[in-house]
Each structure stands twice: as structure tokens, then as C-alpha cells.
Length: 137
Ligand code: ZN
Image 1 (cartoon, rainbow, N blue to C red):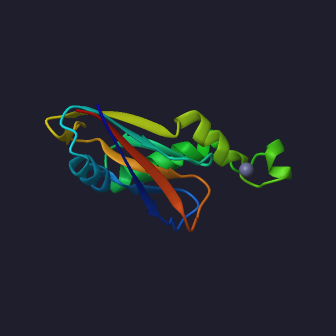
Image 2: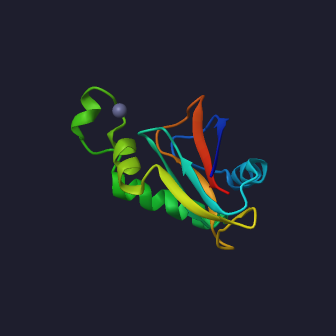
């Protein structure tokens, strides 16, 4: 079995933001040479998340609006006493920092309306990393 790693590194510009990394992940799958297997997309961050959904500007705003409602940035969370970003940790914990996709015939399998996004919950950040691990044969 082959195991191939790459990192995607970028900055974010807003407190809440969706960053579309679909094409970069697909390029890594191609470079990996893996024909059939799985692709892990993992953000090594406690204040960001990974989702797969539609790249439509209205929906992207809707998703961020709903996330803000769920994580309540203005609430008096205990963690905010030491670090004013409890909402971002909660969002990362609820949504999850990873997604796994099938790889078949050398291509990542995803739905037509499933682009891959990093969800920035505590930006702007000068450095966000997404680890892409492709495993298979
Ligand atoms: Zn914190």
C-alpha cells in the first residue's frame, strides 16, 4: 500500500470564512499516484474545521450564519477568560477537523455539489495548514 502526504498552507482574511481547497486536494490526489484508496483531509487546528458542500456564495454565507448562531461568539464562555475564542473551539469540536473521501481510478470521489472547504472560525490567521494523506494502491 502506498501512503502519500502533502500539506496545503494558506492565510485567512476574516474571522469566519470558508476557504475552498477542492482543487488543491484533487491535485494532491493526482500527484500521489494512488489509483484506488482513500483521501484524508485533516486540519491540525482546534479552531477550524473541514466540510464538504456547495460553492455557492449565498449558501456559503448561510452556512457561516448558522455556525455563528450555533457557537454564539458573544456568549460568556469560560475559555474566553484566558483566550477569547471559545466559540471557535466549540465550532471545531462540533463540525470536526477532518473528512475522508474515496479515491477511485486516480480521482477523488465527491458529489457535484461537494466542494471541500476549510472553515475558519477564529481568523484572520497568517498560517492555516491542511494535511492531505492519500492511502491506497
Ligand atoms: Zn482558545
